[in-house]
Amino acid sequence: MASKRTIRPEQLPGNLSDPHDLSFHLLRYLEWMRVSHYSLATVGSRELALEQFVGWCAERSLYRSAEITRPILERFRKWLYYYRKTNGAPLHISTQYQRLVALRAFFKWLSKESLILYNPASELQLPRRDKQLPRDNLTEKEAEQVIDAVDLERPLGLRDRAMIEIFYSTGVRARELAQLTVYDVHFERGTVLIRQGKGRKDRVVPIGQRALDWISRYLEDLRPRLVKDLAQDVLFLGTTGEPVHPGRLSAIVRRYVKAALCRPGACHLFRHTMATLMLEGGADVRYIQAILGHAELSTTQIYTQVSIDKLKRVARKTHPAHATRQTKTAPTKDHAK
Image (cartoon, rainbow, N blue to C red; front, top):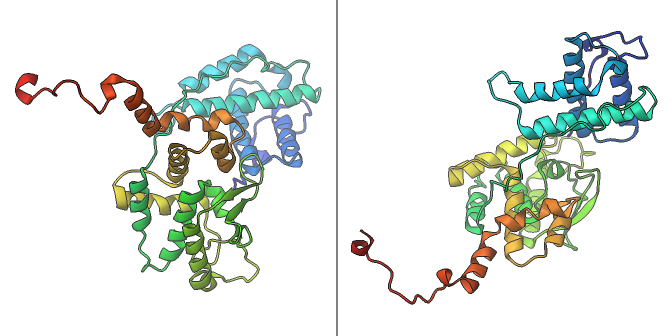
C-alpha cells in the first residue's frame, strides 16, 4: 500500500559513472535503505526530498558530495522556506522539517561510509514545528450519526459500515485497515492484529463486539461475492476483487462525514475521536498509546489537551465561577444593557 516511487537514473543530473558524484551516492543510499528494510513509505519520502536537493545543487553547478558545505545546506534550508508551490502556497513547516531530516540522514550515511571527510549536516538547524492540537474530533453522538449515514441498501454499504465500525472501535490508520486480512480478526478474543504498522511494528488492539458483528455480516453476506481470486486474503475488497486502497478509504469515509455532518473529515477523524472518548471515559493514556501504536507517550499525550470534558468537570468542582450553585442572580437583559 505504501509508495513504490523509484528514481530512474536518467532523471538525475551529474555523472553517474563518477563514484564521487552526488547523484551516484543518492542511488547507493536509497539501495542501502531498501536492503536495510526501511519501509517503502520512508524510502519514498527520502527519495523525493533528496531528488529535490540534488536538482537544486545541479542548478548551482554543485555535483559532488564533497562540495557540499554547511553554508550551502543553510542556503538550501532558506530556499525551502521561500519556495512556493504551483498554487502559490509555501511548503508547510512539517514538509520543510521532513525534507531537512532526510538531508541530515543522507549526509550522516555518507560520513559513516567514509564517502565524505566530515558531515556538513551534523548541526543543520531544523525549523520549529507547531504543536497543534488535533483539529478533527467527534462527539459520541456525531460519530453515531456518521455511522448511521451508511446506506446498507447500496451494493457496498455493508462493507463500508464494517470498515467505519473498525475505525471507530480501534482507531487504526487507513493503511493499517486496508492491509487487514481475514485472519487478523480474532472473534473469540475480541482483538485485531495490526501487521507492520507505523515503524514496521505489529500490535494487537481490542475491538468492540458491535464492530465484530458487522465484520461477521460482511464476511458472510458480501465478501464471497467480491472475491475473484480465492487466494486473496485481504479483508476488504472492491467490486473488482482488489484490496481497497487507503486513498479510496479516505474518500469513502469523507463522503459519509460530509453527508451526516456537512463538515470535512476522513479516516483519521475516527482515530482522534476514539482516543479522546476513551480518555474522557477514564482510560489511562498509556493504554491509549498502546492501542494507537505510538512510539512515544508524548505523541499520545496531545489528547489530554483536547479532552475538554475532564477539564470542565475539574473546573466545576474547583473554581467558584464554574459552580452550579450561584450566590447571585444572573443579570437580566435590562441589567446587561
